[in-house]
Image (cartoon, rainbow, N blue to C red):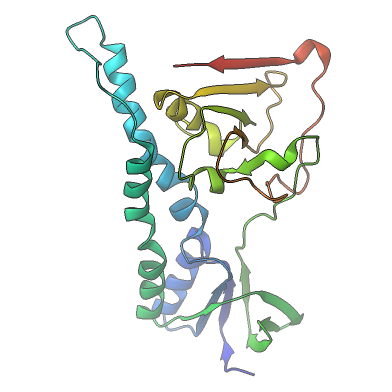
Amino acid sequence: MSDVFDLLVIGAGMAGTSAANKCAAQGWRVGIVDALPYGGTCALRGCDPKKILRRGAEVIDAARLMNGTGIQENGLSVDWAALMQRKRGFTDGVPKGVEDELTGNGATTFHGHAEFTGPNTLSIDGTTHQAERFLIASGATPKPLTFPGAEHLIDSTQFLDLEELPKRIVFIGGGSSRLSSPTSPPELVRSARSSTTVPGRCANSIPTWWGCWCHGASRRASASSAVPASPRWTPLPPDCRSASTVTA
């Protein structure tokens, strides 16, 4: 068994690392663990990389809006591979930077699967650690969708790591990952000259998760496409069925 920590944090995203850094800087004995690279969803698989990708779409959309007023959009296009390379130039260095800050403040970092073995003990890949306090900041647990054809789904993490952009994409859901910005993934895809379809439900009842069904994509997801543990996904009633298709 290791030394006793004042605080053990499970999850190295924004919430977990913020707490760990502040407590360690105050002299607490802090440990933090994550099975995934340090940085969490926002920095590695969500907000920040999406903002990097969407900037290209914003430039093209701005030029299209000015078409006919002295600005010619001819020749403007999205180079998906170059955008992904730029995104990785940002995200690849995040885990080391996050971990370096934690160790610089005196926190002990762990990599692996964490499991409680008692009121004050936590096992990390078979090694037991003890703490007076625990902070669980591990995020949500994914749940697979089960409708016919779900084997073709990929989740938002996989979409933001596609090597090639498919010609046709269906986005499922209207939650924060898809609609948290004026230029969301469907608009980004449209600017890259792909056809996008966004199926909808009733106006005031939009699923909180999005996935995308990529036709002709080089990589296919396993049955790990994510929804919240208690999804609000139900069949579309006849009077609410709708779909919005946008082709650049």
